[in-house]
Image 1: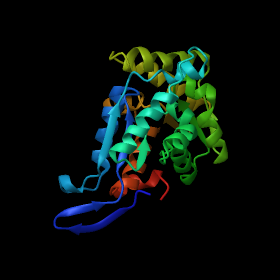
Image 2: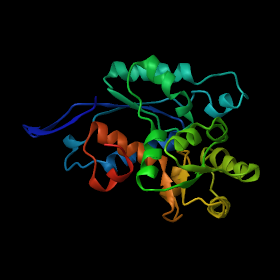
Image 3: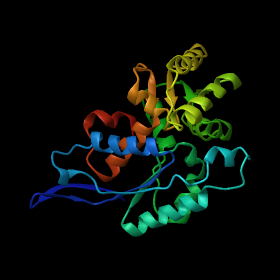
Image 4: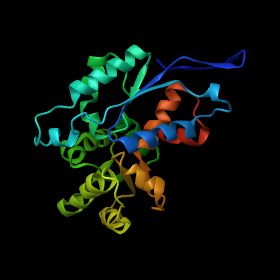
Length: 253
């Protein structure tokens, strides 16, 4: 739907698709997503950047709490409401910089009536395309226990390596009590979990929570990580703008 035209008429680029972002899940991750969209765009002028509509609604109920049965408040109705508002604003395609929210992907897409970029599918394709067979997953407990990532990876013949209970508690603490709370991340704890996943056979470790993307942004964690938010951003630009060549390797065309 979101095709890009290279035609430049009277100094303006004709963009055939507008991106809508369901933001605020969480706010810092959304801000970084907007930065990535700009960095990945092959644009020389303001006018060559893609059109973006964004609504940040951090009051949307917590996705993990609902998935795990700790809350009866489904985030889906409010996500649908925001999606419909974005559609009215002129969005042609939606993106959600929150991996756990992809648990509701199909229902959201059906109820809003717009295509929603599937960051999990795109990530799995990129791993398969690079011949990677075993990946570690760092994510919320909701993402891990719902197996939304593991099932898609299995479809691409990619094996999942997940943290044990103790390691998952460390990652949960990093996500909720460090990054979301605006506190400093203990990089040694993060590296400890990563090393343990590598010992279990993980060739690459997926940052499958957009809060964890902020660690990769701010700290020198090495190259053996694949950031799902970077994949999502690349696909969004490819759909609605002009993507720089160096970012094309991880997405479907």
